Image 1 (cartoon, rainbow, N blue to C red):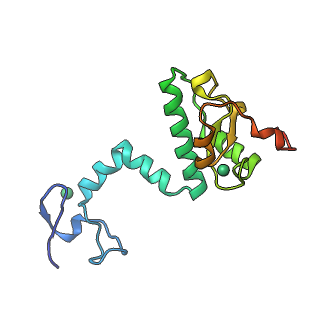
Image 2 (cartoon, protein in one colour):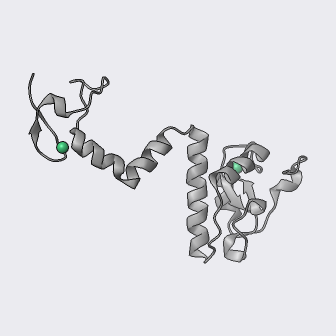
Image 3 (cartoon, helix red, strand yellow):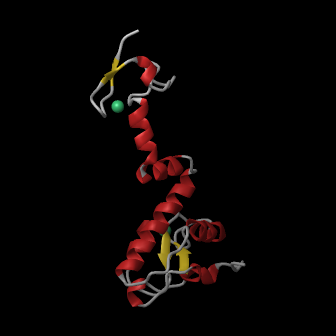
Length: 149
Ligand SMILES: [Zn+2]
Ligand SMILES: [Zn+2]
């Protein structure tokens, strides 16, 4: 049984000071237990753990919501949309309303033109169609037959 170097605290510790991890070559986690515990405490790690367990669409929705909220903040809008709102919009629209392509989020009335960061002002546009829409107000949802309940 060899001792093992923890790259975090730079200390050489006995193998018993490391948690087991069967996916790794030596069967142990790279950081020692006390470093791992510190790591679990940090918010970054917690949100990383949370993100990691989400489905790809859920992750994409999370990023879209974060991006929308960041942009809204730039326009002085503090109201935030949730990841669930984004998922609801995508559930309703299924795909980009203009080209039928990928998912993406668009404010029907752009934030720069006083649009609100709310569910009712959102539609699904892929990034390509979104960037060609620019600052125009265009509601592609009119084509939809089922309104959002
Ligand atoms: Zn350590
Ligand atoms: Zn599109």
